[in-house]
Image 1 (cartoon, rainbow, N blue to C red):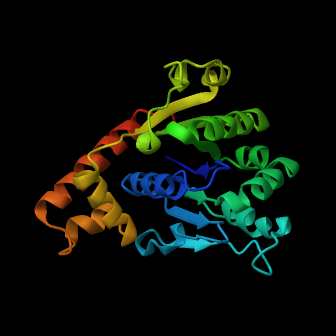
Image 2 (image 1 turned 30 degrees about the vertical axis):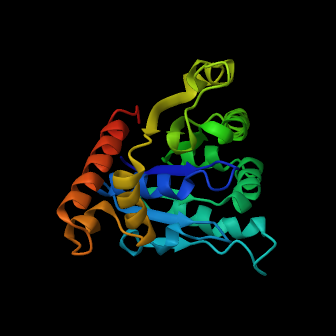
Length: 242
């Protein structure tokens, strides 16, 4: 990973953007590469910025707490362009449209690439009742840019398949853009009483997997389950064609 910029983009709220941001940031941090820089543009729920170990910088894109000033994204872009390193940018549903509009209007993806940055968009598609909205978000993001995509399949809301049983990755919606997808990462639905509870405990405390390993707030089996989950996710990320 050398001078990469990772945007986590999905218009639907509560689908796991911050979770994906924390997983990705921890994976990058574990590589012997350039420094990691993390940014949180969410104005309502800046959860990513509360992970102290990741030293996430909150980007204040709203002057009054309500209305987003697109020009305030300039500070983020200048940071990305002037400093070497690998960057992860999380955004909330409230900043999705303004951020996408800013990035496209200012041709930011091309500017980053011309400046020696490799840009990726990470987009999340959820199962169950979230499938339609998140699949629509996947398509709109794919059509808006020519940037390589990484698909995160979130099974916590149910399987990623239609009422007829067709998987999302088998659909025409996905296949139209499959050539742009560099890799897929599956967020598996595991036992809610064990794995689910442990990951929730970890996320509620805003801890990284490395911090859980050293914490006296987690017992040996809780640490083991967190290790299993992150080992699986990191192995999937290793397989992406970066």
